[in-house]
Image (cartoon, rainbow, N blue to C red; front, side, top):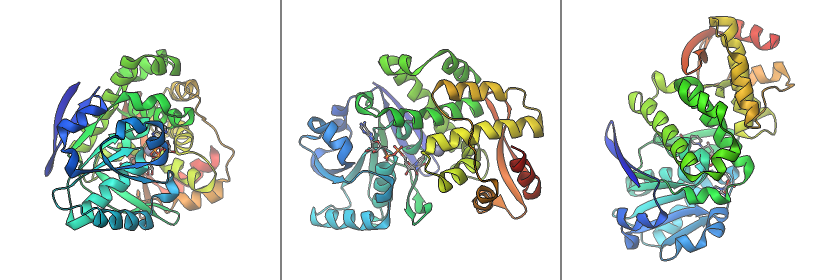
Length: 339
Ligand SMILES: NC(=O)c1ccc[n+]([C@@H]2O[C@H](COP(=O)([O-])OP(=O)(O)OC[C@H]3O[C@@H](n4cnc5c(N)ncnc54)[C@H](O)[C@@H]3O)[C@@H](O)[C@H]2O)c1
Ligand SMILES: [Zn+2]
């Protein structure tokens, strides 16, 4: 186990890497804690939850809504949760988002921590303090920025993670490499799912490295005024595609990253779009979609990153170095039609 502590603007987060679930007992008092998890995680790892009070939710993004939050609050009241209660989200990003949000509004805020169980939650969703829910088709429309007290990493959970969820996680890992870490990009080029799924140390190291990349970016820009926007690499077009078509988040942003690499080549002379698409393909992620340009551009115009007539777009200067460029909407439209 390796404990690292990071300071954010008004709180401290303890990371427990390469830990076992049993360490939880040492971090928080069992009798003053309530675990929030989902049925998939609970059923696959039932033994681990023995002795803990649990609220087990139905799995899936469609449950990341206010109605679930209300139901959880009702259960917390019934369980007599108070200000000294710690909520622990044990699950993927849906569970960590719901847990962080509920803990932030219940009694105006109680302590919380995470045990991320999907690769995506380990390297992305559990980090950074954004916790929110969806409203209709609008993702993460309502929420709060508040850091968890701790994040505990138990790699044993990944044993039961379905392959398509590995792909979602690797899309974000490749994103981190592309914008921040050329050495990790090369290691991913030399690696494979086989390597990371069979070697406990390999995946544990990779997860830790990615968790810290995101942590560093967030730490420098907790409230998203600058550098944090780099984490949106592939996400502008990706979100628009995800909204329009039945695509997983990982596959959508993979296509978004491939196109952003081509746009980077056209606008700022990025010379290696082929390496980006090559790496995505290596991890079974798509790099192309035959999409309705007009429809997707309509959605893209609504993106949160737009500022009047310009869009802040994340591009690559080189492998390992992302930059935010403001592109006039007219020019972006033209480029998307040319893709
Ligand atoms: N707060 C943030 O900064 C942030 C960042 C990125 C993503 N997110 C959010 O995270 C969510 C996506 O996260 P996700 O991909 O983890 O989704 P998820 O929570 O829906 O998990 C994906 C699926 O894997 C299952 N699962 C999780 N761990 C498992 C395990 N160990 N064994 C077997 N099954 C397991 C879940 O039950 C679910 O069916 C989205 O709602 C997204 O908006 C938030
Ligand atoms: Zn993402």
